[in-house]
Length: 101
Length: 492
Image 1 (cartoon, each protein chain N blue to C red):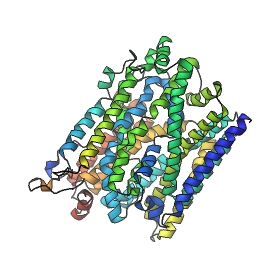
Image 2 (spheres, helix red, strand yellow):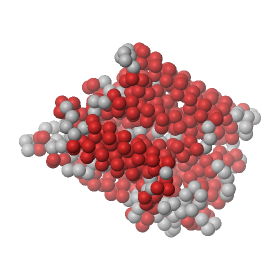
Image 3 (cartoon, rainbow over the protein chains, first blue to last red):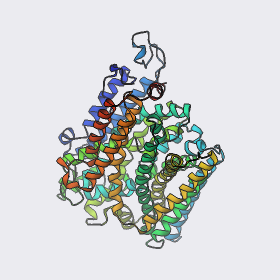
Image 4 (cartoon, rainbow over the protein chains, first blue to last red):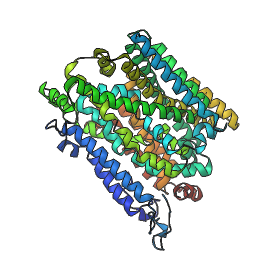
């Protein structure tokens, strides 16, 4: 996933603040279903709302990623006072409205 | 009324509605290849949502999901885990692909890549890779359909007839309507499956144990705690290793968004916003895997030792005294799962095979009408080949499908470089993709040589990304105008 900084000029990312936060969240979300994080929450007992922790954790993470992507979508398509998406070229000059990825 | 008759009537009615839902939209799209492959770029959020969502509900999920939960316990959470982030890249890739498609007329993934890296060979390579991974995928869908009809009718309908009838319906609407047929039939099939998954997934634990909690307690009480502990068991019942689980999740998450049939739906969207919204809503489809897995867990204590594990869902339904109408609905639901994936794969395999494979090899350029005719011919041919495998093939195809994820994941680095890395070159892309496929294949065939027991796709991806970067940096940069089109013009 895109974790490389955009400033080098060799890349073409459209990174808004919301998107940076989202990508950081996505990395954590991905890590939370892999070893070792998942192993901390992967026990068989005690049941949480009827589900073993190993199952409940995955459902929780799924809901979390759903929330994260909804927030990203809302930020990307917000009707802003200031533009939601600002591209790299316009970073030094006043930002242009509605430049999308 | 006789149980068998009720079931057949319901299945018949379901097939008829699917056929109508699939054929009618074909009357409205244009007769061009654009209309057939990308639905004239007119799909609304409603249709896209179901087309993207239906890809998760295949025969594999409907029968294999409960089968995994039943035989391998927590290992089945793998299916949920990779989808958590797997869809995210498409949120960023999709609108870029859509804008380029709208501006320059692309309708497939291979077309985009071949154009960015100016290589016919790349196009043909991707076409071959796609068709090779699609055929076993399609075969599994067909086998699932035949299998369920056979079990539910207690052998009245042999598997080859069940698979045959179901896929004749699919072939008719895909042949006739192209992607819009796939879209509308998936919308109908998707709604049907959603209801069914929740009803069965909540009903079975309640009816058999008095609730979800008591069901898991019963599994623990039976001394099967190891099963519920992440990452579950392997197929032979020993604990699955964390390294194998984590790397399988990672490779599948990377491969998910670049599956050619999935990726190319981006081109069918009405707008980039519609595409994004349907991707944002995707987890609502994914959460339906939860009741599906509960069905499998419900069988662990009550019906031990059923083989093959994938038959656990139809097996349970035959054990419990259910009204014929419920069994009929379930049967139609499983067919919907099979068909909604099968039609998309059939459509994509034919489109990609012709447009990116054959059209690039022949000397004289194909006319639009000729291309559309060839794609339709491809639908019949590929459907027939997959059917032959389904009727005469054996179980090893499931392994082949799981293995194909490692191959598909190799497309990710070049897609990423196409949109974001200006310095990527043709030579870099070819070496990266080529090495990724070869290394993946090598470790697939020689699993004993794998260091640390990771998924073979990981080694492929390391070689792939490494060579893509290295070779790109030591070769002359690609034509800046062409690069600009893909990295900058795709932005807005």
